[in-house]
Image (cartoon, rainbow, N blue to C red; front, side):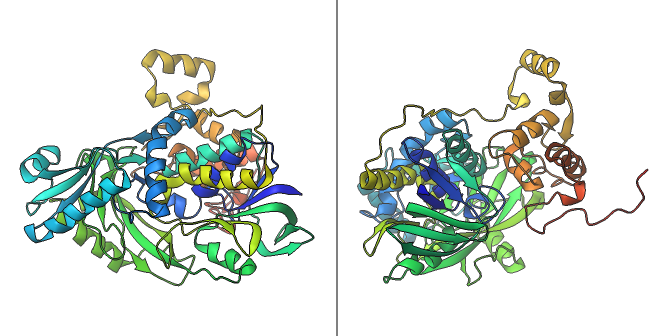
Length: 478
């Protein structure tokens, strides 16, 4: 019997878990995949939005601005990468200027700080590769970029450190009210809880509709992306948007916290809640649209493309709150962009709803700080030499593209909620995220994973389930 069961270990679920771990509550997170950060949270723009785009007065606008303001301190406390680089929304003609001014006014109403409209001369000084057609831009200095994997994992690890239980490869099949509590039937047995937090991403409508007469509908909105090699680092200095349209903020070009350049996303509504395949049409669309806001985009330096799904609620609004006709069931649904930016405020809001309902007391044992994986590249030569003397694994380079060491991979496996798959290692260390996309390092990473978990290398997967990398042996063992 748990006080709270959270469905979903994406950034909203993990943020809620971490905030709930501040209190004397028994909390469990159930996730149908093999790790945290396996859905929308792993495939997005990695942008911390300033908050000028969401409709004024909406919950989305409120939590975006609050989450943005919390991000810097949180990144230091939980030790994940975040940079406040600012963002630009480009106006490509004088005919569009009224829309740009309207966006500025909306941002002011939403409480976004430092907003101003730049004319072309200043814009070109800030972004030399801006389109020749750009006439002005809305500048938001509070915009930023973050590592979405690092943020999600940091939240989850800190929650686990504070006593939250995580159950992976555990799919919720049914939910019903029974004897004054909630009964969740899963593929690995039943769970009971006083409160359920529905943070299931594109599946949140499925669970909501199991318990409420007031139905919710979420459309998976696919976004295709291209990731460029770090050799083009500095192509843009800010997150560069085009004016938003009916389906969202449109295609952007942005640096990442790791020195790559990201282009995307498209916005294509689909029915398949697992439809994360990229398409030629989608990639061609985003390349064409990126060319409208920047010139000479080095698309020939693409090292990978991918797609993610946003959980688009019909009213384009965050649905967060306890259901009137299902007491103890708390929706955290419709969390599309700016969901990543809003996650700190979302977690705080969800925890506040639970605490108000059960009058939970603060835990005297809560530890808010979490230390991430040591990155030898960030150390001085003397510090790195000392680290290698203490642990020679930090001198053994496994991923040559990203210069990731065996020591980092071992830490990723051994820490709370440790990596069990190639993707789990990749999200925690970047081993496999470089130019060769794990072409060289994957055999060694598989070997390390198998050794650490005490299993046959044939059992190691790319991302859990049936995604095995090695399907057999081609020679007898001696």
